[in-house]
Length: 170
Image (cartoon, rainbow, N blue to C red; front, side, top):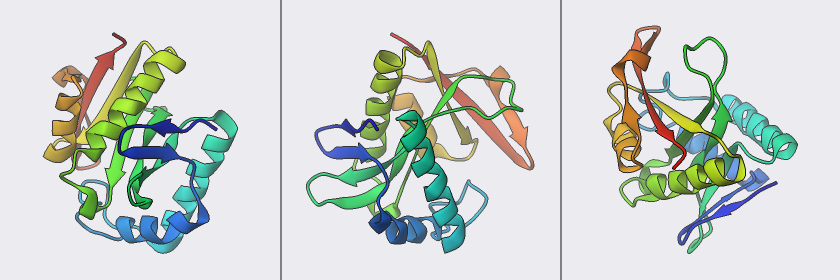
């Protein structure tokens, strides 16, 4: 399985010890504000198992994000093919960090590593990001990455308006 490293972060496979901070992060209503609300510990464990299996099978996907200086689990970031049912196809980039890691530039740093991997190692022609329209924090990261939005790509998911940003391979 591939690991990605930046100056401050390690994007790595999931470890058993990640479950507690992962579950705590997913139980935080602010972290999950635009994602359908908090998850139970069991739901977090299921998600972690899926992420782990995908990384083992494919070598890339949703990596655990660790702060190198402290070894702390900060959240996750990665790439994943977009599920069917949307008007867009391709590979999505995403991230989610525990609240104590917000405001340090970690999401942008992790996402840049994922974009580089997607474009250079996977040879992807384009990478998408999707966020709830009101999720200004994630949308700001998308803009910092140089991603652009075409409102024609946006879609409704239940009562939530989702916006789509994209970046073509340089």
